[in-house]
Length: 227
Image (cartoon, rainbow, N blue to C red):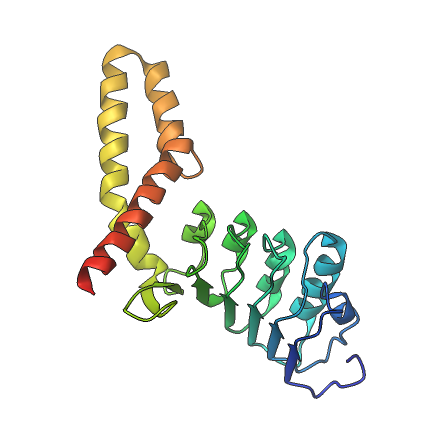
């Protein structure tokens, strides 16, 4: 891999010996790699150092500004390593696609550092994936595609597409209602209580997370009604 500087697309399909991205840690800086597809291998993020080196090497390449990462059909992958944040170094558009990973249930909060991300494509047909609250820090125009079960055929996907900006707008009213109601009530009692409630419902607080989860469940119900 490290000798093929002009390689623009790398696809690893049904390679059970691939458990991490360590082979990409020596990717030359002048590499033109634009798209990486890891399909039906045996990725396991237990060795975080290997992932860290690989993502850092990819982020530092200068041969191509844009990059697309596809991780699909990984049976043992339970989470996406936090070192994904190194891809923020790419100066062009970043696309991340995660499909048919049955044990993947959460994304790292570091994904909020990816200001260059334009598409986040996640598959929730096998299990729901929790979006971190930091998703609101990426570009407002970033498109979030959520593939959920729908239709008459088994495992047929229905795509729920929103921009981060749309998600924030739809989430804004219930959050403001929570903050206004509880903070005003606390002000009546004491200022300390108001501060605590404000902390509770600001981004990262437990109340904020609960409200976002309720919003996400509501969005799934709304789209189900449209079928």
